Length: 294
Length: 161
Image (cartoon, rainbow over all chains, first blue to last red):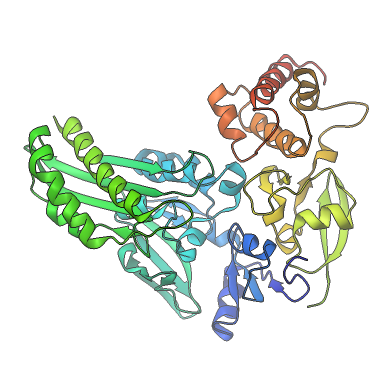
């Protein structure tokens, strides 16, 4: 029998204000459900631990807006909306690409970016691109709004900076990466549907053959999606010739990578495989950047 | 938790159903409304057997709580064509041998109808992507892809299905 259909409550207040009021009045009692692509899987399997849900599928969270310097993506926007948005395709093509990797079309139609982040799976597809693009989040509650860099959102395995009464209102993307080099790759059992063994996205600027700025995001190599800060530091200023990459840079980068990641064995892959492939992706990224900067 | 009433439009007909709010749309369609054309495969959004359209968008009905489907317009396989007049996609599946055991077929047809609505002249690559959430363990997909290509041609030519 389906876990608990008769025991579970699901409210649909219909407006953002009403949702936030409910979360504020009874903090921790109500679990937000957006597209249901995670919660309903647990429900179907009889593994849900929560019993009270509130639908946050409200129109106020489904807007993508573009002003001078930023694109603002409502937390309730589906991955279909994201991958089809002309401004995102133009300014943040790796995010559109990651959205296209996320499940099949039906799941892209239902799954939301806010749900993807709040669910906080280390293997989620959208975080690497958000790290690479320097995304910020606007968290909203009945108490007001606060804005944080996305790097500060994941606190530990399935632990986030969201307070009990908060939702991800908006994902903000700064339009300053149009001229950056970029690299994105998902390694999975197959392209469609499969959850990643590793997912990576990076942006960089190269000046006179040397790395001037670099941002790397990676999934499935730690308890949370990760910005590879130590690896970035190891790569700053390094020369991007094939010889330099082969002789020095890649070893320093692999060492830094190992220092800040902690992949595990699970049903999708092994720690050893992930460590090796993560390093290989770094090398492929560096060669891609070296080739593009020539 | 008690039952609640939800109204939704199913295959063009207004329906009122009584169900717990977390009940899966799939179960409501099959058990409350008797629309057993929609199949359950994996029950976790991986296989696409339970595909239906909500307001024209393809979804896995096993992952939609009925409370979130209230007020929407649903199309199931029963609403795609009629016994006397098949949809061009259904006709093409028949002609090309796009079905074997049949469990994936209703979902596959819904995904194909959705694809051709969004993209009337898909390339082979676009067909593969449009159906990549729908798994088939019998056909090897080639005849399904051929059927979608044939349906696209039929629809474009304006030939009644």
